[in-house]
Image (cartoon, rainbow, N blue to C red; front, side, top):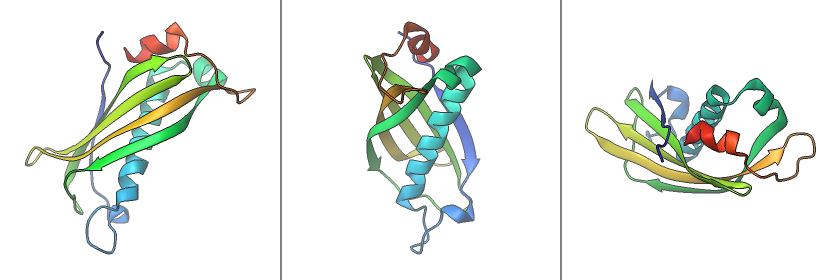
Length: 131
């Protein structure tokens, strides 16, 4: 099985900095959610995006190092499993300048039918978008 990794590089904006002078921990979660949505939007057809939505069941984040205003960071995401109605997605945020890992995270998602808002089985078509 080959995992399809979605990767993005960006510069830490001033809006991400907290009163301690580094990126606020909640901002990392926002970045993870944003890249997950971007990955889904880029891989799934408009029909799939219309028929299905993902809801978060659980987040787990390990903060390894701080990051600061203006630093260049890279965020990567990939789906490690998609069985039944649940999917596990991983994230890695790194600082290329020194190779340090800033954040490692994972989220468990549930696939819902967009109309009924009820959990629905992950189809082979959806699973194949990411593996």
